[in-house]
Amino acid sequence: MPELSRRHILGMGAGALVVSSLSIPFSALAANTMATDAIMKFTGGAKPKDGLVTLDMPEIAENGNTVPVGVSVDSPMTADNYVKSVLVVADGNPSAGVATFHFSPMSGAAEASTRMRLAKTQNVIAVAAMSDGSFHSAQSVVKVTIGGCGG
Amino acid sequence: MAKIKPRVKLPKKAKAGETITIKTIISHKMESGRRKDKKGNVIARRIINKFACKFEGQTIFGCDIEPAISANPYFQFNAKVEKTGEFEFIWTDDNGDTYQKKQTIKVS
Image (cartoon, rainbow over all chains, first blue to last red):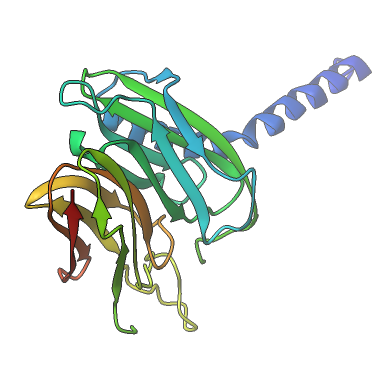
């Protein structure tokens, strides 16, 4: 085949490389979609803004079975300005949802902490729904040494 | 499963208008429904799926829980107390059981 010059073959190789490198992040993308879906369902399609929310998590979690997670939202927590609820999702877990905290003006401060499972190194996202209808979010990457979802 | 025991820690006394911190934990395996036994059969999911804290019947804090919460679920949150009263804590199991704990606080 005279038309298959050296230059052509090189080009094909480069093409194959692009395809293979694209296929690797696909699973990560799928996991992200699940987390995004959960957030969109929570916000009703609105895109959450940055700020106000603080997500307190370790940078490295040795044991993915119990990773401490704390969420606090900057809010006066009065009857007409408070945090209604906070959704926590993890984009690399087999199912994205972690927990939804529901607050009331009687909570005093929009703070809650718990312990969660993380299957692998991933992003944890907290989205807060305020009483005025706005949404705020924070994100944190946690490196996991031993995953904690069983298998 | 071992006996499920809820535990709660909050101050006995507080000043009116003070925001107190409440810590709760319940012994529960939180079987995620993703683990398999030795024969390869999936172990059925059984978790605490809901938690609520009420003060004199009014819900102060609640939580919808997914399998991603660790075994022996622990929650720490706050409550603003204005008067003496009783806190009630309710955990709901996947099998429909509820576990309750009550504690009073004296507000001066």
